[in-house]
Length: 165
Image (cartoon, rainbow, N blue to C red; front, side, top):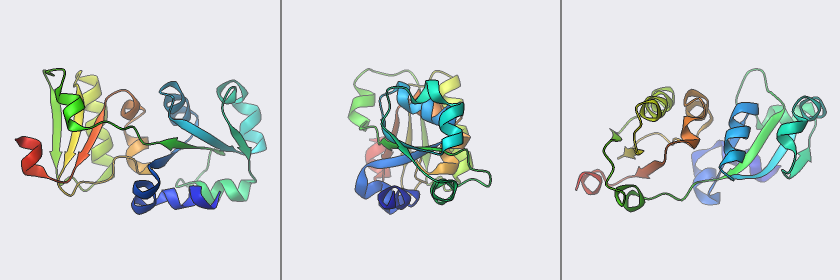
């Protein structure tokens, strides 16, 4: 649980290679991609989402613990620790994609999630965050992407000139 709380910060996510997905929609989408390592769930949420939790490693937690893991005002009682997808720019470019969305120095997580959602809707092969962009696996960006972050590959690369080369 302590290690999971550290995933609320970018540094913790980067070091661990993991992120938190909160709520039934994000947890279900992460599970479909095989990214869920474990799920922290309250008793009430476990009853509500029993079908979703089948086959996943579940750790029961109190309402208070769920609130500590949550980044939302009203916690759902369902938070998954997920493995960061390992997708690089070379992986994305290997298929000669017709469309890739590239954002440079994008700092607003809500806008980043919206870009991911839009790129997914437009059939983009990937979304690339170049330069000093926001971490696409922070909670606000994940929620704003409306699960699209699990449907379109997302690449983060600090070296903007290399991205465009």
